[in-house]
Length: 241
Image (cartoon, rainbow, N blue to C red; front, side, top):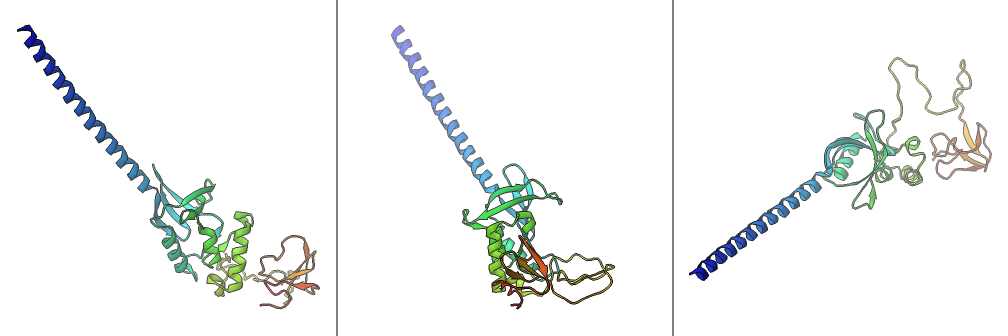
């Protein structure tokens, strides 16, 4: 009789142990599934969710949203020629994308985080692509004349792409009450008289650059209205292209 009771209790204990083991196994599976869903949702959140204007966008990171601006390139402003093309370019390249972002400046004067953006699995630099297509122009002061951007802009100018085909001064900042200023440097020889002369930049190597050239007043050289030397192949020097 005692043997039967012992066998009964032993069987009951074994069944209870098996039931508890199955329950813990299902619980672990559900926890793994939940953590996997959380990882997927976190990964999906890391993307550009909104383009505010050309080169400015909202980026959704893991924990919060940050407004960013691309580094080294400037774009036309609203109601300027080329604005719609720049906005379309930004939307096509950035929206719903998961770009690689490198911080260049924590915050600028507009409280925007300045970043270098690469897309297409790191194969395309957004700023360089915009400059090479004439969508925007190189911000030389911000990038400290970054070499690849300089070359990209020279090619876009030579091919007369995008904004370079527009006869528009994008960098002019002038109030309605201010006096007009010349677009070509060196045209005012004095405060009292206006002399329509053109000053060329002649480098120490004898290369002649005209106003508007990327190499104008770059490096060592001097300004003169009667240059002597070799004309620049980009701007034409004494002979405008």
